[in-house]
Length: 268
Image (tube, rainbow, N blue to C red; front, side, top):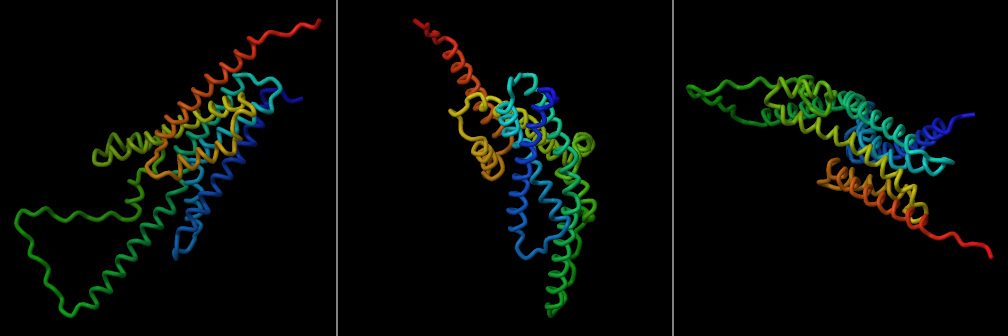
């Protein structure tokens, strides 16, 4: 017979992957449908999936802890902590390694497509010119023209395609892009922290029972706010849902205290 801890983790994993699949499918449909006339390629699908799991993993922690605690006979805090830590570690692995690697192929494909379009437009414009203008004379002391990066070099310095250790190392050696690398590293840390906060929120909401909204509604609210609301970052969601989790935890404890304080009626 399975132990209660194993059963708790099993329920959390099942609901976690269902929520993750839903978030990833939504992102793929939205992103691929907005490509317009650009043909859908395998690299594009891999990129859409990678973008979906970046937010899908931390957001899936809310329904995971909700259903795991609801289905437990005797939910223990240590079971919730174990599941939350597992979710945070999985979030770190996804945002730090899996998703950046998954976006490299499409970013390279996109840069190559843009450069081909620019080159074709340049050739068409030159062929339409009647007179060929002379190149401007170079002034004395003017800095030499910088060598443009190849698509491979452009992808190599892209913060979103670097693994987390590479981001930290690149911020130390590349002063020109250090700020971008630090911002991307901070964003990934916020997503990992958001996974822990939403796990705590899911655990707390399950204790409220019928007084709380359905977990699917909470998950939809977190998805709309974190992913689809312009100007809202993972750090903003972290603060908002962190405050909500603490507030609901206080309400839950107050409700438990009032129920415990009620006198037990004596039979005549």
